[in-house]
Image 1 (tube, helix red, strand yellow):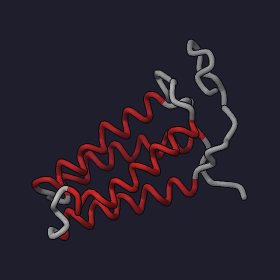
Image 2: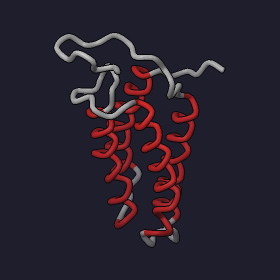
Image 3: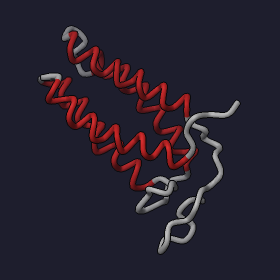
Length: 129
């Protein structure tokens, strides 16, 4: 079955996720450990963008499939964090993390993790391998 997102599309979604998450956390007025947990994913996603072998990777060291494996692990962490970090009793923070996990799962399911490399950016040979 053909998926909606290949390497470039997934990287663009991740870029939007970094910006969207950085803006959504203060807008949702998250507090305490829920706020910290949600904001921790901003640099984590940004690091994934920079280091994954996609057209947007600046230091493309991580194979695209590995990015997908790390992403599914982060989704599991987003689901578990409200209980592990002790804020499951705070509906706003808990539901924010569960919503983030749901959006990330949909993105993960829409991504073709076996997508072939796309064009190589100038100056970075092998950026998409």
